[in-house]
Length: 298
Image (cartoon, rainbow, N blue to C red):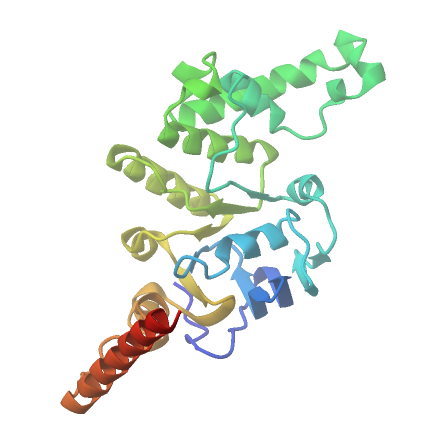
């Protein structure tokens, strides 16, 4: 685990070798500020978890970083290159890919066809070369061989000729992860990879995520399963109300009061004195009396 920085509730840590860096990223929807991130870094070759309660802005932040949404302000770079305004398909070509909380497999295409679509720079996609099979058939065979190797790795090779729509929820998660690897990415961003996955497939997915790190890839994932976060993460970043409130190694972050407050509400464990209880009851009774009086006068 990284040890060069300490968790903080108000400032974000500088990493020694960052693959992704974001500064001043904000996104507002009307009067609601969904994302307000001052500074965010992902260390190369590590597994980083992005956690926080529902509505914290995690998925919105994912969408901003990968080009699926436009921020109101801010800059972010991948391998030192700005991604501001770069569309999602070009972000993927640069080596930064993502999966979705709700899987985006193409249900009416076969599993192998879904995989081939993940490959970039396919000559057969252009009109003129597509007319001459000899110009693209060799490349398609290479892509198919790579796709089958990945399907075998994710234990989906027996499903290669099945329609993707016939797969279970967990198998679709595996297919998305396998398809993402078709571009040989440096950074893989997983949005709630364990959501809706049965316990048997959870362990398989955990193993695959760890194997990505073992290959030297960088992983950033959003997850609510704290056991998974503690098991596989090198570093944890916590969001609440659009802001980063803490970060650090898993065990340290889990014990951080700012994290506990973010998930359970500030002062959730404060002792309720007799005086405070009386004040709460009196306020509640006054509110009920006011409502009753209003009904009588209406």
